[in-house]
Image (cartoon, rainbow, N blue to C red; front, side, top):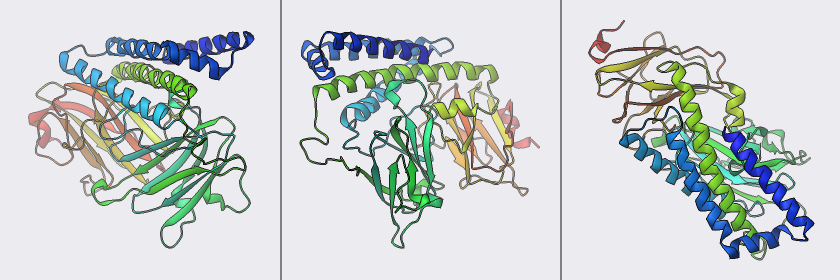
Length: 402
């Protein structure tokens, strides 16, 4: 549904633009007219209002607590959209910024991740200058389009920091381009295509409290690159008009997409089936991660018990989300565990227990006052993909389970 709605909007915009061109109007003059008339702002507000439909999408909880979280979710998406498509929208002067974090969450955001993104143009070349620091897992990817356009975002290039050449002082340089430069090592080249529009950076912690994310900056370096204040980062009516469209489309599109996912997850509530990898990749997921997404719901005296034997892998984690697929507040509560944080049995297996109150066993995941929500399990670079086993039991019986 989200792809259909966003696709119709995009088609309407293309047809309207073609009609204006036939009348001798340019995209810049059209944007100027829309800004001066107030049409840009009116459409932005109208699309935000329409985004509220996600909160009444079939299957969504209608209690006051869940609906209030839903409204907060929409405001967070709005904030993220304005930063991405108004403040940091110029691919001539890209800015690496955090797209999801402690107070902007979407799509089962990973509490172990330090998410970053930047707007790019596949027709140009860029370089990233960085300091590796101590974060455990660092990857870079380029993808078609951007979040505000709707539709899929299939990958066009991928690079793992393990394959990079890093200097003795921890510094490194990466080049983003369609063709590999002759003076750049293969491990320091991030491929693009002409359709590439987004740089996605994933920094994953084993122990967030004791690891430092990589420091990164990006700039354009192709032969036609310009960096002067009169061009790079220069605000124009066209940028604002397009930015407002994309920001509001993100809010409406993402909220509907993940409301649909959450509804579909209820078909296997309290289970953890493997998620479709192609669907994950098209939504911007990491192709090297095997995802298990689902819905959970527990009564006040119940617990969800998850047993798993982690495979040989770079990393794994489990997390609890609210219904809107926002991770619960990991700043103050234990709502996830991972390869480093978990307590294991002697045979290397583990048991995770999701419950409203502490059952007195290792690996307790706090529901933080929620009666239902969504959840995710991830294997990262796993040699095998074992299925986590789940069951709902009485909270009082958890300690006596075999």
